[in-house]
Structures are given as structure tokens and as C-alpha cells.
Length: 475
Image (cartoon, rainbow, N blue to C red; front, side, top):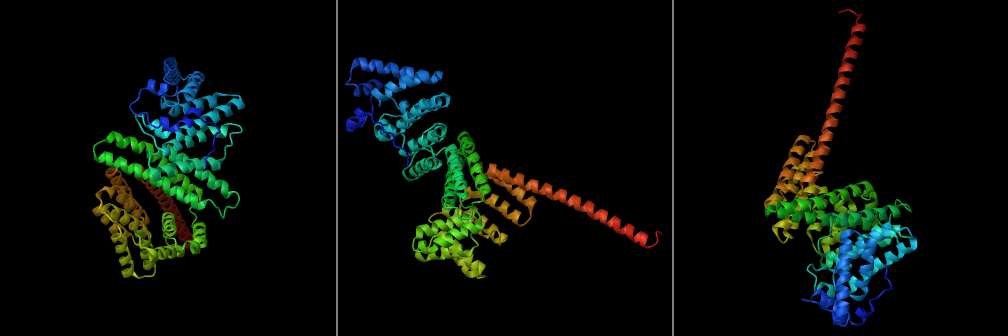
């Protein structure tokens, strides 16, 4: 998935087990470990490390590179900064270098850092104050590759490779853990996914082979941002407003970017999504995971009133009922006019939840499913959601605001946006954006009403004048 650089630390490779752990060791001990504890080498190494760190502070990238090179070759386990600060040094070397050959050499060395860090991660973690996971390393690699490779001649850069780097990093962090995925990383990943979608659309806009990947990337990126915003809400509840504000600042912007980019992409075209899943139903009919994934994708993209959505839901429910498939079956029953059966499936969806928090989330999902057809019932599930999980109040009020828009009660919708923002700091930016859109619509409506009133008054005046002259012009 990413380019292998043909470079090895000979000593480290030959004696990997020797350097498996450096817990409770000093910098001098780690320099000596790869230099036979030679006192002169330790002294020289300490000097190079000191000069490397000072050069970074001074932003003297050329000097930092000279010092880094000695450390990387002769004391690869001396400091973690060799691997964490080295890529930034190379980034500046690459961006300021004019010679293409030197740019490429710097780029290849930078990629070698990630190769070596991946290989020796356990040893580096053994003495690090802040431990890193493979996902953390891959995320950093994806960022630096994306920032530099497009501007380096013969780097082998492709959009596909950049996408694969980000995808591998995010998948690894989701599966095996890691520090938080930065909002900027999620935003860049989705921007690249969007570019991939557009690149594939050039060949055939109607049958874009990347569409299902793009839809999933949208849900995954959006979900990751929303989970971090949930942590902001927890911090706020605990009285840590500084952390809450910091998380909102880091993730609300990327979430808005992801939603706006997706909305403008045209990927959620119902006709195309229906065509994709209609074609794949036969192949997926016995695979509950693929069926449920398709249900989620269609529900998230306003395709949950289509026949193919109902077929996927029924097929998934027949294999193993889940709350997603139960909601789909409920929607189908409701469409058929069977309200009792619909209510049974909705109750089943709640029954399949294993705690009140999940039940609250399911109620919001049901509310959204009912919003376009039964606002009153949709609002009733919003109230249930808050009962199950008071922490969902902000999201619940925001959904109610959307319901009021459906009911053309814009003043009520604005009031609910304010209520949502007050209830949940993580909802505030989204609520404010919806409120602004509604108020803009109100302004447009008011202007249209004013113009209509003027026009009606003009027509009435014209009518009276015509009647006056038809009557002979006499009062």
C-alpha cells in the first residue's frame, strides 16, 4: 500500500532483538548501545543531538540535516525526535530546495524515516514518554507524503497512493487503536477521497466505480469527527470547558467541510445509489455484514424510501435481526399502511439495543426516518430519545428543528436551533448554521411576500381603474 524504500539500518537489522527494550535507559546508554559503549562516540553523539535540537529551534534546516544524518546512522535509538521531528525537517528542505535531484533524495530519505520507525516501533516506545501506535506512524506518513510527493519530480506520487496511505492509517487506528485522529487528517483524507470520486467520474459519470467507497469514507470521516465532539461534550459536563472548546475547534470545522464537500459532490444521487445496490443485492443476499452496511449507506443518503432499501432490510432481518434492519422493515410496513406492524418493528429495534444510550440513538434514527411522513410521531421519538439519554438533548432539539422546517414552521425551527446550541456545545456550530439558513429563508420569504403584496395591490388598482373606465369614467 505504500512504497518500500530500499534502505536498512544494518546494525539494527542484524541485532533487532538486542535493542528490543530500552526502558529506564539514558540517552548516553542508548547511544552507547549502538557504538559498543565507546566513550568518545557517546560524547560525539550527545553533541550531535544537542546541535540537532538547536538547529530545529533556529529553523536552520541544512544544519539540522547534517546532525540528523549522524544520529540516524550511528545512534538510531538515542531519541524519538529523530523520527518525529525528522520528517518536518525534510518537509522544509524539500520545499526550499530548487534542484530536482536533491528534492528527490530528501524525499526518499524522509520516507525511510517512516520505514525505520515502523520497523523499530517497539524499541522506540520502550523509552518514549508518549507511546505511539502503528496507526499514529501511518497517519504521520500519509500527511508528509501528501504534503511533499506531489511537488517532487519522480517521487512516484499518485492520488491513489495518497488515498491508500490515509485509508490504511485510519483503518489501523480504528482497528488497533492510536491517539486521536486529528480533525485536519480526517479533512484531508476526505478531500482526497472526494478527488478520487471526481477522477473516477470523468470516465463515466453515471457508473462511478468509486461511489460506494466514497459513501463509506463520508460516513467513517463524519462518524470520527462526531465521536471526538462527543468527548467535548463529556469534557463540558465534567467542567473542563477548555478541553471542550479545544475539541470543538479541532473537529467542528472538519465536520462542516466533510458535510459540505459531500453535499456538493453529487455522490448521494438516489438513482445511482439505488442502481449500485440493486445490482449487488443477489451477490450480497447471504452476507449480513454487507447487507447491514448497505442499509446504513442508503439510510444516510435519503434512499430509505426505496424498494431496494426495503429488500436489503428484509434480507438482513431474516438472517439476524439488527436495529438497522428492524427500522427498515418498520418503514416498509408503514409505507404499506400497516401501522401496527410498523410499530412492532420499531419496538423490536429498541429491544435489540443493549443499553439506554444506544436506545436513545435508535430513537433519533427512527425520528429521522419518520420526519418526512409523520412529523408528530417523529417528535414523539425525539422525546423518547431524551428520556433514554438526556445527553442527546442537543441532537434531539436539532432534529426537532429539522422537523419544524418540514412542517414549514420556521420560527419554531429557529427557537429549537437556539435550544439545541444551549443544550450541547458540540451541536452549537451546526445549530447556528441551520439557524442562519432558516433565517435567510425567512428573509427571502418575507421579501417575496412583500413583492407579492405590492404586485397584488398594483393588480387591484389596475382592476379598479379598468372598471372605472368601463363604467364611463364617472364616479
